[in-house]
Image (cartoon, rainbow, N blue to C red; front, top):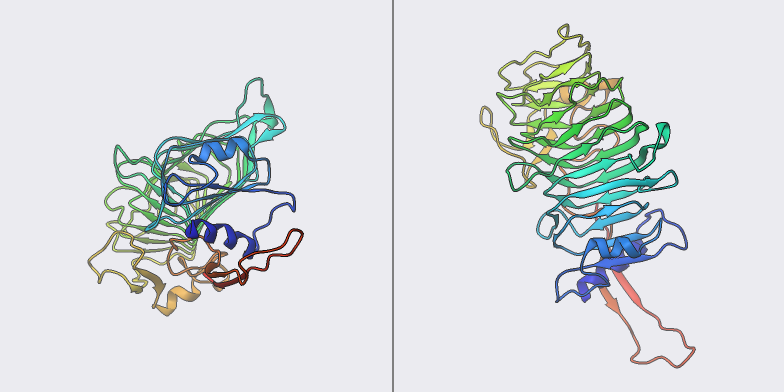
Length: 366
């Protein structure tokens, strides 16, 4: 119970924006850490728009949400919240959907389906807007781990989705699949792609998908992209990860190192761009010593020691994870909330109508 209380109290200490009338619901399938619900779906079914769901470490089945919720997992590794089945982020009617939801520190080992379609829906109403995925871990490296984010085709399209400080750990399967052309401000920033495939199904998204300040690791000899059409790619590091599978796209101020084909595909298939660095070692602080490479690990520090990398991004900013809007030296395994270290109730009883004083001590966590 102590650990669950810790999760509960941390939310009260952190500046997460939610309505003054919002509720907090807890989920745990560990008998030693009881909560209000044992399944995520159970909490979602009870919750109202604007509520927060705190999820204790464990393996859970997927969920379907048509509500605006904040879902916070205990972490993505030791301890981790692991989703092992399909999760659907949907619209139900013109006025009922999961738009505006936030998903933080959750590990997805199976599909996340984002779908704005609904029965009887027409035109611009079929959309899911304003989603945030932060510090999540998508694992898609085997037939039993297919943590792919899939956007289903929708007449209304999708706008203002942000993926920041996430890990996309791939293999033979995709980590992203975009099945729609109407994409606006889909920002993937300060994330790690490890042997990952980003697939656009050759849909012309008119610059609506932006990949900025990410690092792409160990995708040689295969392409990091597949049929991506008209996307913006800037300030990324492609470390032993081939930059191909693109058309009509803009590539600015990126870097390659140890690739079979070091050069960027500028001037081919309609691709344009400038300011890219070719075959330059970023000199990560903690990583395999070139020419060796390594898969992503929480123990790595991807801060570049090469001074050139710190100033060669757009507008003189850094290339890779340490630049951009959510700079980090690596993805963190916990949510960005304080940790309560001590709960002290100084009295053993309180009279009827009295006031119970509780003293808390907490440490900040970045």
